[in-house]
Structures are given as C-alpha cells and as structure tokens.
Length: 284
Image (cartoon, rainbow, N blue to C red):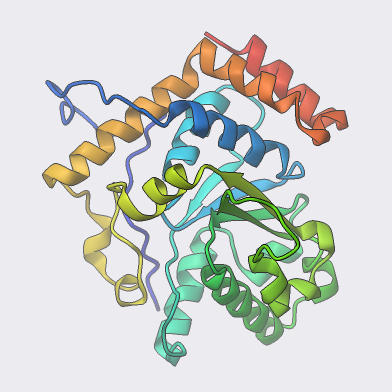
C-alpha cells in the first residue's frame, strides 16, 4: 500500500512543537505587511465563500497572515496548504501518478471528495504563466475520468485564483488564463485573479526563504520531507511566518482586513459581511 507524504510544517496558530526554537531571535521587520493585508483581503473576498487551498509555497505569507486573522472565526478551518510543485517537466510516470494521487487524497483532494463537497474548493497560487495550475487541473481531470466521478458536478466546485504581478492595463496586456485552454471547461467565474505590487510578487515568488522545501516530483515519496528543517535559513523563515500569524491575530490587522473587505464588490454578499463583522468583533 502506498504511503502518503507531506512536507512538515509547524502549526503556527497553536504553536505545536515549536518549543524554544525561536528564543533569542529578533522580531522580523515585516516590510511587506501592508501590501500583504491588501492581498489577503482580496483573496478572501474573491474566494466566493469557498475553501482556500494555497498551492505550493509561494503564497505562504498570505496563508500565515490569514491563519492568524481567522483564528476563532467561523472560517478558521477553511484555509489550507496544498504542497505541490510541477511545472516545465516531462509527463508523469505511472508510479508518480499513484503517489501524487495518494498524497492528494490524504489532503481531501480526490475525485470522491470533490464530487461530494458542499462548498467550492479554491486553488490559489502566485501565477506567471499558469503552468502549475495547468498541470494540477490536467492531473485532476484525468483522475476524475479514471474514477468515473461526475464531472458536471465537480466542474462547478473547482475554482482557480491567480495572484499576479500588477501591470498597466491595456488591450495588449498578457493574461495567463486567456492562454490556458482548460479554463474554458469551467464556468467563467471559476477563474479569478488578485494583482499585487510587482516587488511583492517577486519577493514571495523568487526571493523569500521558505519553511519547507519545494515539493517537487522527486520528493513526493521522500520520507525526509516529513521531518522539520532546522537550518539557519529555515528557522529565519519560521520566525517571519510566526510574526505574520501574530500580526494577523492583532486588532489593527483584523480591523484593516475588515475595512478592505468592505471595499470589495463581493461585500454585497451576506457571507462576506458576516466575516468582516467576525473580524472586527473577534479582535483580541
């Protein structure tokens, strides 16, 4: 029987197993806090009341900020990490397909689970060309067909949210979803985007140290990824992540999130107004 694997990551809301790992370390500066608050609010507002699954590691800081902000609200269990990295590579081999299916099933992302969801699942990631989304969608589409699950039901529950680098809008602007044929198989509302400042996008996608290693295909069955990393860079990344969770818990950040939610078109929907109220009232 194939064993599922998932990169180890501390629970930064409950602080499980952190111990004294960060003792003596200075508080990170967090220069990107304000644009991250803006991005996090837009991600929430444009999720369509779905369950957010952050793909890979690029948007970890948005996940951490929201984990802190949503702790104690009705949505505290509705944001998740989906370890997955697969881009410019040759087709998967049969044993890799089996392993990835087992890994995703353990995360509740299988054809069976998707067909029986009551809410949409929103895959969220930093996007440049859309290759990760393309591979993830293609993988799920083939798996659904193999399992003979009801595609016409599942397609209404799949959503993809790209976090893109902000550019000047013009008729000639290159938009990733317009060049991804598979997006036409989904309702138009299933593909949404959040644009962020290009320096923030570059920091998150290209320069920021991460707590976990990239979960590439050669690591999908690697037991070593299930162990915590204690390298200097990994612990630095951990300190930054913990700081974002703690800022997310704070009254000023929750209030700022609620204020930005109110500026989104989706604020006319009852679920988002309720969430904004929870953020304001739930502030410690």
